[in-house]
Image (cartoon, rainbow, N blue to C red; front, side, top):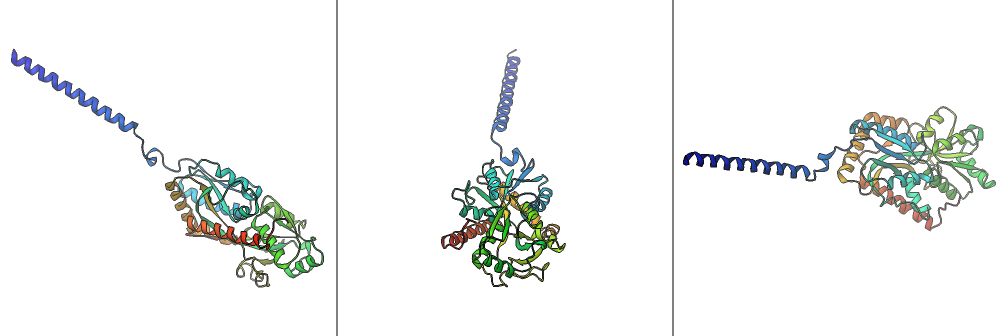
Length: 343
């Protein structure tokens, strides 16, 4: 009888220990479930579409480049990269939208020359381009072409200069917005030749080009991506380019430098940025997808066919160097009176 009781007690004790062990194990599992998990375990980035905000209207150089790269990045990320156009205030509206967005990698901005000019030309810009964003990298570079409609009757740069000196403020030039590269080129051209031109700003290259084609505005320093097909079709006259050397698609068109007009060797450049505070691992994923897109031969061909160049390997540091160099150059020009934004 005593042996039976002892055995029963042992079994009871064993059962209690087993139950306690099970409860302890369950508790441990509960603590593990409640513990914070790494971001990569919670969700894979990106798990929904990414917005890429462009500060100019559809059809312009920035928009075209953004859409080419966005499509390739979508394939690489297995998520849509959707381009949205928010033109106005020389990209400040678009930039401000992104600067105030959640820093989660799902809202990007295509920044570039215009933002460097804004930093100098606007008394109180809505954001500081060097601190409001984390750069991802430079995407594209392209020169501009000085163009005019055949109906205007201008056949050379020399004609523009002669007429502007004889009749100040009679020749107008279009731009894609105040402080855009097309505006800056006009300011520099007028300053270099000591002539007075009338600036007519628009909300994007396409809108400006419509009035140039119609002859309502005398000329424009147009992005090569916009102007080249129209020059080839004979609906625009190419007078000069802002590049360092002649463009292979326009071998008979001189550079402004060749014509003795220095300091207007302006490339339009732009790249992708995200709001400051975006996690570094997400920036790395985006940068990798962007570089993969830019190395794609089809993407490079699409750029080349429009007179643009995919900038491969120019990451965050290169983007920052470009932006700082442009801002420093422009501040110097404003300080010495070379450039003003009053026209």
